[in-house]
Length: 153
Image (cartoon, rainbow, N blue to C red; front, side):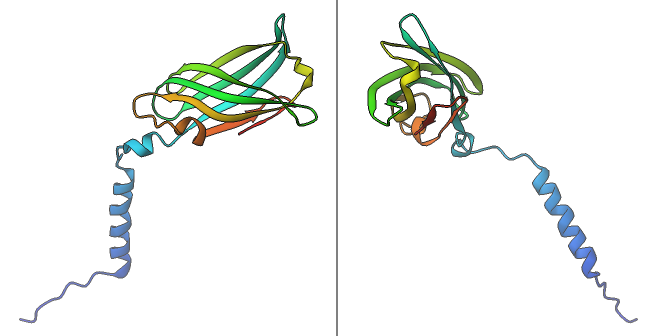
């Protein structure tokens, strides 16, 4: 009795492989700690408004790092419209819960909003939280501006 060999058609093998891969890709894989915290801190300079004390600066900040930030503070530099550094100050953004958007306002005493031409994030002076590295608050920062004043790091 002659033996019968079973030969698979190449398309059948490719189809089986594709199905196996699709099942693998559809299976949820838990994120590593590094992948979970690979997001960003989005910081938007939202408004500069004249106040009784001088100038009120408003920021919209979203923590999308994947972890709560217990304390975040930034050293900023205010530049005149002529490009001269007018002031260096530290703004304490306090706690920033994960996946939460916050509005933070600061009164800048004796500052004329109309004279500000640029706001620079010089550094993060505080960046604390479980699983948060000290450099995360500056290296993962995305800065944008809603108005005409230039804002960045």
